[in-house]
Image (cartoon, rainbow, N blue to C red; front, side):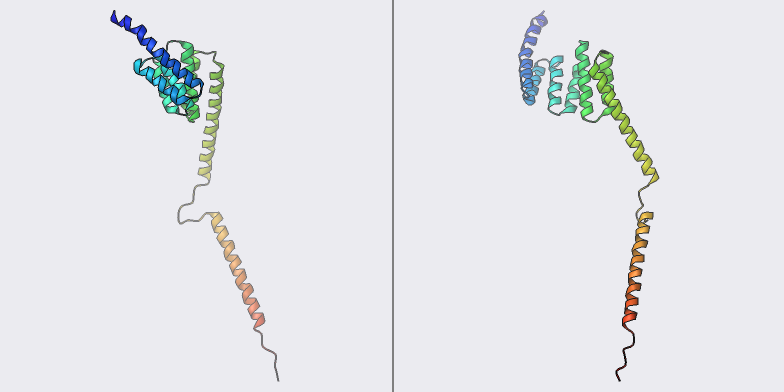
Length: 194
């Protein structure tokens, strides 16, 4: 019976802190919002709303890994399918910002499994799939190019380097020949002076 008496107080202590965090978030004071949500979580560590909102504040602050961790914890405590779908969507966006496309794709798919009507999740999934396909194509092109043009081994010259060296040697030889020819022309016999 004591548990029932504590629960409403428990929840009431958390709500003002979540409200304070929401106000700071609205004012784009993400550090303050994080602090308020963390205070709420000290009182109720399993509060899905505080965890979800903390994830959003961390995301806005550019702390994507921490945001994903907060979303992961929140997902264990959220029963509302709409909120769960939003959570997976936000997780997908956080992964996309980190260029973790495989994880992003998985998160968007989870969002769509929970709420198939989420058009933003569907659009972002398509973007992530396209970006992943482009990345894979670029990697494949680089690998193919590396196989065709292997990097030169130390001590060995590439055909282009050999060609440049030969050209430089030919130019030097031509200059030497020209110099020799000029010298031969100027060192002829002097005219007789008698």
